[in-house]
Length: 481
Length: 77
Image 1: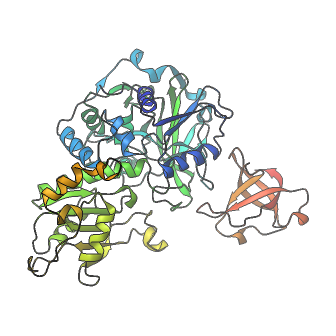
Image 2 (image 1 turned 45 degrees about the vertical axis):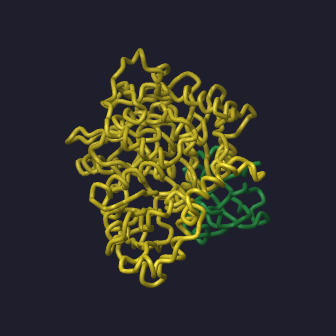
Image 3 (image 1 turned 90 degrees about the vertical axis):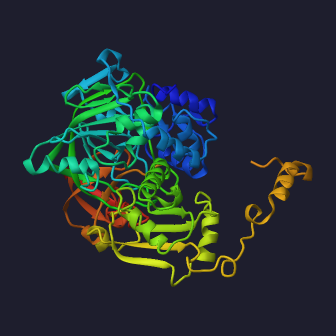
């Protein structure tokens, strides 16, 4: 059974020891952010702040899906499910999309309270000051942003940061590189406001999948349905023609102005830096806010890995790229876009040896929407576990010739968050790419040129390994994980 | 536990010419409410004894001076 709402998911986290209820009074001003940041950096249970200074009756869930364990729980799986298994399950479930269903307003918990027009006050909610030096209080850091293509009707779910500017306006970037920007480009030139909805605190799979980069024209609500194996329940908004997850904790509705801008940022971002600075962004004018009783604000405090963004990359990008390479006929064994690589790194392993295999892998990755902004590609042989960074590092320093096997490409796609670029390059999206070919060269004789690998798995006879493993505890060691 | 007074974002410290009345957008350091004011600025508390603390940040959010300056608000704009 999928979780009906965020609250059922919170209960499951608590049962699994992955939630900490915080009853002590906590300040929305930096304190909640600092606690949540430490939770990410130490891999701790998600904090549910139940006593927020100045906000009685309101709660904050920090770090909602900050580990693969929590992600597995969100998907209705055992917390022990490995990332390899999660990727297989993702691809398997994605093969059968499930359309959402529309429910009546009377069945939608997000309509328990409705503020329209002058009643709107965004500061009614405990929007936290997440990082010292942020441009303001960010009400939107982990949610579903909904917009619609006015020409095709394609509805996109995304997750885009949103800062409180005034009691009834937000500001947030609407980058043309994002799907929301694709939609906005169809409104702005005509000076038309673009309707938007922001669903904060939906059931967890919807929240997770909104932040993932999937193909344009794919309705993420159907993908969320597939991953949770039940349709997502949606309800119509009050003031605009969009639908949102019906069990959301808070729903913000409105229109993005085609002409008005206001200050937004800086903001501590997924790259682990406050990287893009303060700038003018479109004004998001709020026409209505609906919310549950005692609402729970979900907060992702982005920074150094691993947080929700990195988990999205770790699962969805790995799975999508694996699927793409496979469909292109490349003998790919596994793909990992490790969370620690902040989306900039992809590691792929290949079966067999062929000329230019690493270049083929990298070129294919860079040609996809998921891989175009991953300037670092590492290709290894399939005896290397791409999910074990230590094995990858070992392959790199033992199989990658430091001059011949590093393929540098001078020009590549870039985003402003690429902190290794100069300010000029970031502004003008002038990137570069590199592929580390850590496979044994195709023309090396496997019997004389390639040295035998010395590890427990690769070196010892099966009989010896089985005997040792079966007797492991008799040697006085703890049982192996 | 937290800073008091006001904060301001600037491109460079030189934008805050000391002793001169300037029109700037500032924000409350505790509520983050923004307002545009006419004010006097000083890097030294002695030069503006009736001023309030002002924390100066660069465009990336970093504090440009670890110690607060002083601001004396003359009026809202």
